[in-house]
Length: 205
Image (cartoon, rainbow, N blue to C red; front, side):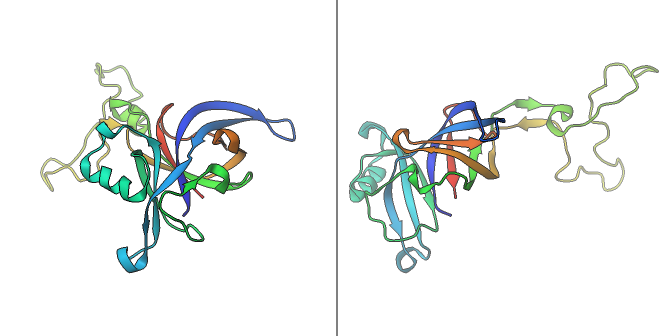
C-alpha cells in the first residue's frame, strides 16, 4: 500500500460538523524523498524506498552514503519501503502529505511505549486471587500454576507470564483522516496511535 513516513507530534481535539469534540493525533508526515525504485525485473517486486529526515554525512556509513549519492539526495535518517504507488517515480523525487485525502482511512504502524518488566495482572489482565484471608498471605497478584508437575513436566510455549511489556511494533488499522494540512506537512488522525511524542510512524493508505 502506498504511504509515507512521519513523526508523532502529540494529541489534541477538534469539533466535528455536528458539534462533537473528537480526539485526534497530530502527525508530521514527510516530505519523503525517493531513495530507491525497485522493479520486478531487477528486484522481483515493485516498490519505492522512501527516506525521511536529513542527517549529517558524518553519521552515515560509507555504503549508505553511496546509496544516497546514487539517488541524488542528502543522507536520510529513516527508510521504509512502500508498494502500490501509481505512475512513474524517479530517484530524488519528493512525495508529500497530499497523497492522503480528508475522510479517507489509513493504517498506522508504530512502536508502542515501553512499560518495562510487568506482572500478569497488568500485562495480561489477570484478575488476581479474590480471597485475601485463610492463609492467602501476599500472593494476591501471583499467576498461579503454570504447568503440570509429572506429565508433560514442562511449561508450554506461549504461557502467559510476567515479562517485558510494550516497546513492540503495533499496527492500528482503519483510522480516519480528519484533516490534511499540506503547508505544514501535517495529518490529523481520529483517535490515538501507538508510540510516544516524537516517535517515528509509518502511514499507509
